[in-house]
Length: 440
Image (cartoon, rainbow, N blue to C red; front, side, top):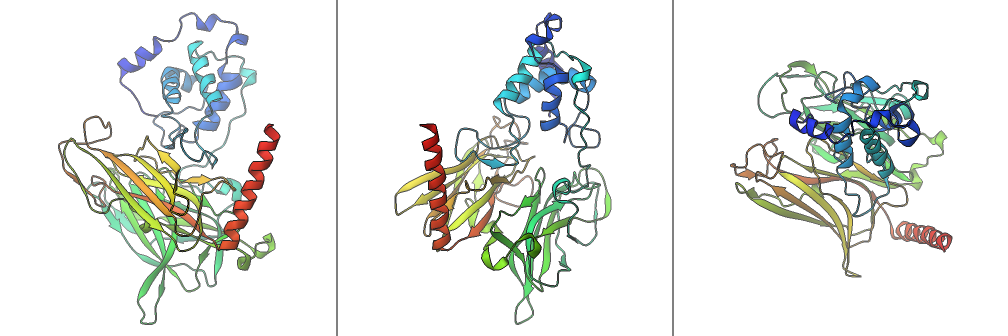
């Protein structure tokens, strides 16, 4: 949560009735009974000692001074940070950080009542969260089955954007299907690791190493990925991993830094059969938006990218990526057979500090027929109206540096055949018919 100027905080506090603490606790929410649980569910994973939140929210004494600001931030949906429109496109998402309107209303009512503590006996027990540098998926899946690490590299304390691109063995000696995957920067260089991409490469007949698919992608704010049931993101036998790690020095030198990828495998004893699954991969390059461009000083821009497949596919997740002048992105599907253009997802409040992979709930992933076009649209604001713009007097071009601009989307794609595509369509129609019948 961002710190605002003192004048803004005092103005917010002026909205709180002076007599609110004297009200009957039955007339309003209390921290002990309702708000503490909302804070646990939505805030404490970042707002605790040693984590990225600039203040800790692990007790009433820590939360109370920030109560008016918390109310403003949650009411405007700036916090928890999750760049995904609530009124456009598919809303059925896994690991959705957005607070429910009921929880938002509860926090606002609590603050308007004077932020009362309530009965301490109503407090929930403290909750344990993964510490920085620990696997976040481990709480659900246990420790990874296999870990691949980049080779060590010295990160300087100061300087411009830097890239480290080693190639390392996977250590996997046979084809395996990935159940879940998480990329983890080191605890020491967490703040300077802008992103870390890892790609499978194999040797061709001439001995050259050629890319054959993405392993994983990390950008600040992103959690791990779980592969949907019935899909396999495969580690090819004999592959190595080619890293592309982008560091942006943050004032702290880190010698011998390494980034890790943790992998959880599917096992046959779990009832998983590789031969009965569809291939899934993590794709980027078919959904870059706009290619090369220049944004003039005090100007705005919109770019688009397009891609079609010659076979049906399912889009399992969508992760937009822009830099400091980017303000919004949308993904659509245009079907030339029907003339229908469908908005799948949109993020109108882009913040480069948070890179979320929006994973669609099972049964709600977009299905793209063969020959349909996936459209990626991005918007940029290089004016003073963009609060994250470091310098509206500059020309801004497409590039890899943090101060350059870029627009692409990481998409997890499951490749289907016509039989599987038609089966999934029929399953969804049956579900929707049951829902409609139940509402009559």
